[in-house]
Image (cartoon, rainbow over the protein chains, first blue to last red):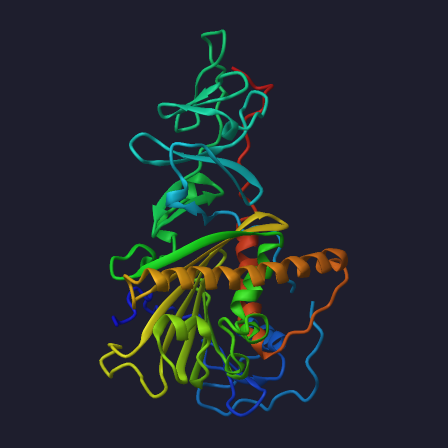
Length: 77
Length: 360
């Protein structure tokens, strides 16, 4: 079998947002391109936070992210 | 933010497979614009507005004279640039007698058409799907009409957990829905990646019968979505424990590139282009037939489901609510990118023929 050919190389873009599903939990970890990290129970709230960059993105890279909000996922449009 | 219904203009869209377009006139509506496609005698693909400037007769119901289209109603004749070169009964051709011509690029077995301001069309912006006409890969493909907004297909393809429930017995197994995903959004390049790597999964018939693997598998699903139109699923399967080598080569893996082109026809219908390319059993017609039939079955399962969903949402559109959970992370990201693309393209007007009152 040949190696996968043609995969577009990941770029050096400086605006990559990452969302990881925290292993063993139902939580999502949002990682902004600025290094800010925060856990969420609701992907809608997560994207709202990520895309508000830099608003509320205060924790520097490497610091522990704030605890997740404690409530059920909100209904979203 | 709901799924998108409106269109992102100033973008490239797949209009057809290259082998669909020949010396016959092919009508196809893209983003609500009626187009007609044909090839010149030299083989170049031409896309014009399908409506004659005279009385709006469909040019696709007309005929070719060399490289020109002769309207089947009154004989208005258009060259490949859309310029009218002959009208019946008179020598003077009105200055505004032309139909819009659309930028077209033939690439990776697809015919891409630019919908928007022509001066902004850059072929370098077209995302690639090189496996579809690569000599070391074998492809099967098709297109199914979908009576649903394109945004529902985007939602569907960005969250593959539905394979477990909608496509059981074909491509779905319990591990797909049970395995967490990782999502990346490259805002600058406008690409969404959603990865689901299963270390020990049941092998669904789609892969068992095509690869010959009889036991459990490593199954990787790596989505690379270039909104709004091109969706790539880089799929790797191998017997459990068989991983790529340290140098990146992967002699023990079976690779399938599942490609979708999601092209809005109208706000309520979509051209669902699909293709499956593989790097194994490349000359085995039996495997090609099996993958073609299996994938078409899977696509039609989606079509039936999304058509029903569209009917429900059409009755509720102004007031419905939905609930998003972790599996929707990629789909939500896609909605946001497409919304930004729609906003960016809002200044681009649909192509229109000149006013009939403004004759020269």
